[in-house]
Image (cartoon, rainbow, N blue to C red; front, side, top):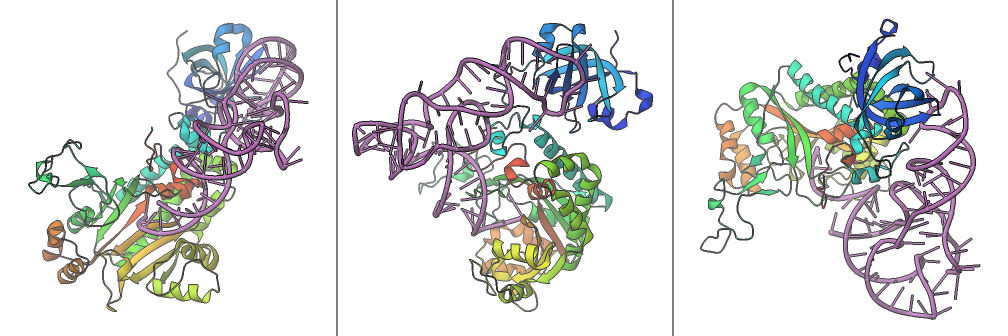
Length: 468
RNA sequence: UCCUCCUUAGCUCAGUUGGUUAGAGCAUCUGACUGUUAAUCAGAGGGUCGCUAGUUCAAGUCUAGCAGGGGGAGCCA
């Protein structure tokens, strides 16, 4: 028998109609379940191209007894057979098996995944096998779709993808503790005459770290190409143990010349809505599964984001609302203090009931590069707050005036020699520009309805955990 | 890092005021069943009760320390 070329299961389930019935097809995939009796076996096969399985029907008398015995949950098999309309209710088509080949046996005594569901905590302990589950298949496909949609969105509006460096020599942003990068022998590093570690003898001739943000580099590119974005891994050596933080995560940072804070907000809102619409248009099978199994309000919540404009208000106005709310908050509310998660949650989930963009924060609680307002007290920062996950985007119009930026750098004690190259962009052909950062995993958290960030990245890096 | 809860079979969990031989469902194995839908039915095997020390005639159960995990908080994306 000459075997046809392999067909992916997504194609069989999504694209085959009546005219394909009776055709010989060839599929490969992993066995999810096998049921049946002494005459007939039903094998659910999944190849990860779609959440649904294809049902393979095998007449027991046509197959070797040992082969059928080895077809257990987790095994990888190749099936050649006839595509037919399924008499069963649960699937439109099935394959009447002619030949089955065992590609990779999985010992059912030791294979850890069962037909029944597992806790997400247990699956984290077997992160090498969890992509074989419906849940992680769905999450990984949605994660891919979001990454693709991000590139598509920016490409379609004429922005350029900039590859910012992963190893950096500056700690200018002060976004958090950094991982050192060195090629020195850490048990016996070269020393200066004062006994300090001598970084001039290290690989780069200076101290280097893993990046905490590609923003400063993106600004350089924006002040040459107009609209740019970065999309890459970033690293924080903070001892953060929460369902919303990772030591290694992916960040998208668009940066735009000639955009002020209002343009920046418009872009951020358009961008988030585009991504959510993309998920609803392209990932419905996976979303329906997650909606059913984990979060019954997921799809409604995604649709609601599209229906309304985000609420835009100043930090000062937000403080007034919080003070007038009559709520009993754990942390104090006062102008000049940063907002706590409980305050953000109140604004988004209780007061407005939709995403909120807060702007014009006190300069003391924001980064040095943000555009200073005329009032001398606030900066043109913007935070986009989402239900369930809090701050999803942080951004600002940037300070483009050389003297004011330099003054702020001095006030904060940032060494000028570390940022001389950044300052030069304000010296030569400076202009109004803005940008923001989106935490990719927080987006995927929101879109999948998962509640722990460790479940939306294939290999989570958190304190005390880098096993897989 | 702080607060808090949890850790018993491969998985998810019961386990009373400390008291015989620690249970269930699912999974696994054996068998039954002529089209199943996380199949169903019957039976069997499976345990260092996280680790260490202590209290007690007696500890899965009480105490302390340690380890791992969940949730909340801080830092932030």
